[in-house]
Length: 184
Image (cartoon, rainbow, N blue to C red):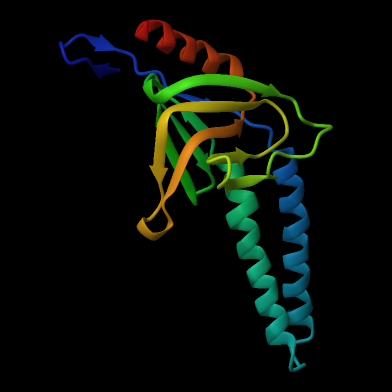
């Protein structure tokens, strides 16, 4: 419980939006096995000159796997009463206030279709769109009221829409509709 400005206690509802992580889990397992293979091979053949190179390749594969496949499994998008926080591992975080959202559109299940830009976090310069995808299921598109500027100074990006996936799309659509009716 937190105290409201007027002193009356109110409950702060924070919801972690679930996502289908099957593709990330499969890729994690594959790349962890590849990295472990390289490290094991370098330790078994430690008497050879190229074993240090094989060990370095194995360590790089493991670090890559942890950063881009394992960490996004444990981080979820967060929905609060005032904003949505998009997360993709510990490398990406973006906050969007619900007041800045014009529309939320359900794109649907694209399991048989090619991915919209692929898995992961991608910025599409032509469409001025971020794709934050972990799977092909439950894809939503958010259109913003005014372009959001993100990024570090030399690499500024202007974002007009965000595409992401979640299993809990009904809750997000309900809160977005409540926000839209409050404004009217």
